Amino acid sequence: MTSEQTAKMTLATGAATAAATQAIARTDSAAVDKAFKTLATYDWGADPDVLKPIDQAIIATQGDAAARKTLEKGLVDALAGGISRSAKDYVCRRLRVVGTTQSIEALAALLRDEKTSHIARYALERIPNEKAVEAIRNALPKVSSKLKPGLIGSLGVRRDKKSIKAISKLLGDSDLQVAQAAAHSLALIGTPAAAEELSKFARKASASMKMPVADACLICAEQLLADGEKPKAVALYKELNSGDQPARVKMAAMRGMLTAATKK
Image (cartoon, rainbow, N blue to C red):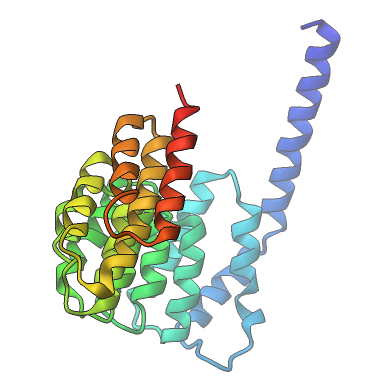
């Protein structure tokens, strides 16, 4: 790199830093503080513009970990303050953006409530920390059947290997939505262990679960192939291309085997 190029890069970096500093400076801290106080009484029907200073602060502090942490703490403290369902919904949506480990406990506390479980798990899904997944995993046996599909789905999205055994036990659940969610979640996790659980259940699946499990196996095989587990993927495709599987399943399995044949 020439001295001229170095100088240009330095100027560009300086300009970017200055722009970021100005963006943060434009955030009216008094307005942000007022918005946080408003959260205590905010409810459905209220003017959403009163919370805009928080949104603007989140945008302005992108890349500033310390400033984001302060905003996150304000959101977490708000959750602990007995705010309305509408305010909780707002806070959880923002924690999907700025949430870190300091949000996990507050979000986990909302997982067992039917009114807040879904938005709380969406926020936890986005936190790249094992403790966030652990919170969802630990809540699964404690929630109602109505909430189980959502938590099962989140564990699938996070590809949580530690949940495979617990989820596989729900494949035969009497609640069809829970059972179908379990099959899809194992498909998304897509490890050899998840494939084994799906394959084992497929042999005894009821009529109502036969197609959901077949579809899950196809997704799982595709994930195995993407992860470099070619022999495991091919074995699963072969199972799906035999027996009394519907024609569309066999065709999809055949396509999968053809795709696998092109992989090294």
